[in-house]
Length: 497
Image (cartoon, rainbow, N blue to C red; front, side):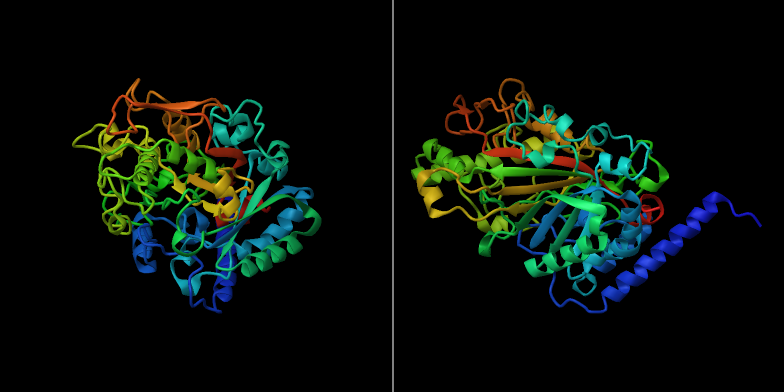
């Protein structure tokens, strides 16, 4: 009897996934007692394993086929990004299938301590990487196809990318491994296992080690603000969003799912486009700007006026409390309350008095400024983590960065043009969004090709006509790349064959 190629592929897929699932189950027999993730107050939590199982069953979402980092968010303790070039494609494919695929962590594993591995392992490929592996199918994402270097001007990076690291301009990054755990030793041990298994089939281009900030700063980026509060809930994974949390169809994050209306090859289903950006943060310079430009509110000291300016630039206080709900002083209890710190729409009054139109969180998620939340189809799921040491005493006293630190920015979406690129180019970098002539650039991530940025009369609530000009880019792009994070079945039955 002749078996159709479609049926044969289905059999191969099922056998491959059963083998991977069996290996992953064996690895989980040595159960964790503590999570490899942080759990800071104020951030939305992952759903329970039972809740996600029920949601995914109802939506037909296969969580064991989706790479785990896509759904984890900004809650990892230690992470290393290892970028590589494929120099021997046949050997790489063979080792990827036999040695690496069983190590890849899926989404379901991340939901319980007992099923989490010692180290999360995920992998993603650039367009050059897929081409090197002989995969010619069009994923129908122009930004991914062209690569981030060719997209740098649309993102507002300086002409010629003078700040980019040479490793990101050479054009030889074919893929990236993501290793995340609760200890550096775990990460390094797993990295050694993977690189030893792949041997001479790859060469390492670049590696970036990142880690959650210490103590009470866990979950906060280097400027000091709690980060990741506005990550959306993916339908079919988390069907109980918090008040104010966007609930987005799975197809806005995962290819081939509901609301992904682009034609894709079948094997790309449940993959996601990974945007990586190494964003240096000039923390002493940012703090000096706040000190030099305080908001002169009679009830506040100059230091509190500087803190207020920073909060209005971001749209939140460092605790995570939104200025829309706490406009004059921080409210740490509100910031730590994940059921309340995101529960607002910018409506009533819909103006800049409570939150500037240019504020970072308003620029990147305008909420009622666009009408109903359902009208916003430009969502990303962020999974970044800080890198670099804390600010030294010498740096703080001189107001000058001498050691690099920043954010290893990671964002997942099914369409880079409608996701990350849209947020950066059309909203953050657009001085006329939301109100022409009275908004200005996003003062945090807005970019103007290295030229000065301005906001027009909305950062200082006491002087509505006061304009701010920002000469220094407090966030400097050091480069990056666009990747595709395939499903486990795609690795088993397309990429590694």
